[in-house]
Amino acid sequence: MSDLLERLRGRGWRMTAQRRVVAEVLDGEHVHLTADEVLARATARLPEISRATVYNTLGELVTLGEVIEVATIGRAKRYDPNAHRPHQHLTCSGCGAIRDVHPVGDPLDELPATERFGFSVSGAEVTYWGRCPDCARTSTQPTPH
Image 1 (tube, rainbow, N blue to C red):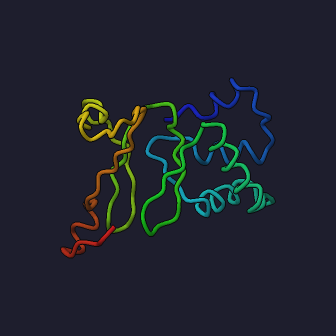
Image 2: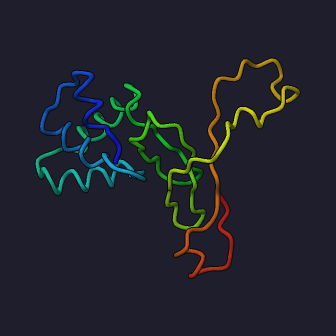
């Protein structure tokens, strides 16, 4: 499980009922929900929550650095609560499912000095692409990403 709720409480983030529900929906391991999925799950818990509140709360969590906005080509942005645990993403090119992965080594070590073009490199985002077991069973045609 992510520790999103604990982190937010530790920051003294004002925990309204609406904000709490959004944070609870996002809290967990391998959670990468779209804003609409967050809205649907939040509405199931708190029917009076508005779309604007969900979207504004997601934006605030991203701005605070407590949630990572994950963009994949041709798909809706997803929100990852594991912002404080270094990881990469494994994405299904069929259905868009995303899993957190923790490869051994530092991706910065993989970029040779001759390819840095004088940049002072401070971070790297790596996305691994493939097909999840369900998509691999149902289709043998690769889906472009």
